[in-house]
Image (tube, one colour):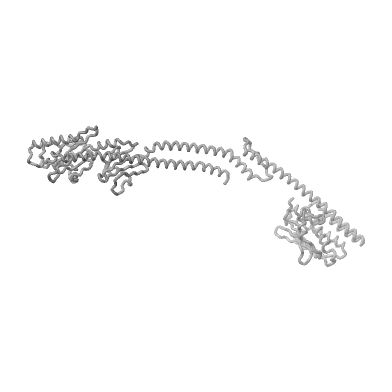
Length: 591
C-alpha cells in the first residue's frame, strides 16, 4: 500500500467510526426515549382508565338505586286499574325522580337519566315522545315507535352496558342529531316476571370526554372504544366509526391490563377490559415525541459535518504539501536513468524536509551523472592505455625472438636460409602493424601465424607438422591481431620443440551459435597445471614469473569483447595441451 492509499485509509479510519457512533448513539437514544415515554403513558393510561371506570361505576350504582325505587317498580302500563289522573300523577313523579338524578353539583358535565317503557295499548297517551340526549324524561312508545336498541337491552336481562346510540327514537323528518354514548340497562320487575322498561343514561360521552381532557399528549389522540374498536368517544379529529389498530393489538385472546405497541410512526398504549368489553387507546405520533431529540440530533449531525469538513481540509492540505511533492519525486526517480538529461529542479517555495529531500535528490542525480561521465571517460582512457601497453610489450618480445632465430640460422647455415628468414620476418612485421588496426580478419591473423611458423621451422633441426583446419566462411571473422602467434610459440617451445618429426601442432576453428571457438593443440609430453594457468589468467595481480604472453592475449580479448570471451587451457585426451580461444562470431568490439 503506497503513501497515498495510506493517507486515504487514515482519513476513513478517523471519519467512519464517527458516523457509525453517531448513528448508533441516535438510534439508542431514540429507543431509550421511546421506552421511557411509553412507560409514562402506560401509567397515565391506567389512571385515566380508572377514572372512566369510576364514572361508569357511579352511573351503574345510580341505575341500581333507580331500579329499586318503589314508584318505578309499581309502574305497569298495561294495568286497567289506574285512572288517567293516577297515571298522570305517576308520570310527573317519575319525571321529577329522573330529573333529580340528572342534576350535577360538582360542575361536571350532567348525565341525563331517561326511562323508556313499552306501552302497546297507549295507556300513557298524554306523555310526550320527543327523546333528546340533553334532557331526562319518561317515554312511552308503541310498536311503531320502538327504538332499535330496546330489544337488545331487554335481552341483556338487567345487565348494564355502554352503547353508542344513533337514534333514541325511530328517525323522522326534521329530527335533530340524537347521537350519544349511553349507559343502557333494562329494569326488571321485582314483584313479577317481566321487564318494566329500559333506563338510558345519555351524554356519557361528554362525561368521559372530561376525563380524557385531563390527559395531555403532544399531538396525540385518545380513544375510548368497545371491544370491536368501535369508537365511543375520542379526543381527535378522526371522524371514522371504527379505530384502525396495528395487527399486534389483536392478540386473539381475552386481555386484562395494558399493552404497548411501537411502530415506525406511532406509539400505541391500549388498556383492555374484557369484562366490560372496553378499551382505552392512546395514539401518540413519534414525530412529535422525538421533536426535541431531532433537534439534538441535528446539532450532533452539524458537529459531525463540521468535523468531516475540517478533516477533509486537513487531508487536502497534507495531500498538497506532502503527496504532490512526493509524487513528483517518485515520477522523477522512476524515469531517471543514470546518464540521461535531468529536468530542471522544481521551484523551491518552502524549507521543510520534503522540499530539502526533493532538491537533494535532483542534485544527487546531477552529481551521479557527472561521476558516470567521468568514469566513462576514464575507462576509455584506461583501455586505450592498456592496449598501448600490451602492444608495446608484445612487439619487442616478438622482434627479439625473431632476430634470435635469424642469428642462429645465419651462424649455422649460409646466406640463402638467412634471406628466407628475413623474408618471413618482413611479412610477419607487416601483418603485425596492420596499418594501425587493432582488429583484423582471422585470415590475416592466420597468415601472420603461418609466417611465424615457417620462421620457427627454419630455426629447429627437426621439423614438426602443422595442421590447419579452418572453414572458409570463418576466415572473415574479426580477431585481435597477434592472438595466434604467442599461443603457437608456447606450443612449440613447451610442447613439440624436442620431438622432431613426431611433433604436431593443430590449428582448428568452429562456429557454435554466436561464438567462434579457435583451438591450438600440441602433442607435447611435458605435464602442465591447467587449473593454475586458468586461475592466473583471471587474477588482477598475477605472479610476474608467470609471464605476460597468454595473459596479454586474454586481457586484450576481454577489453575488446567483454568478460564472456577469452582463453581456456585444457588437456588433450591423446596427450598434450589444448588452448581454446572464445570470440564473438560477429566480431563486434565493446570499445
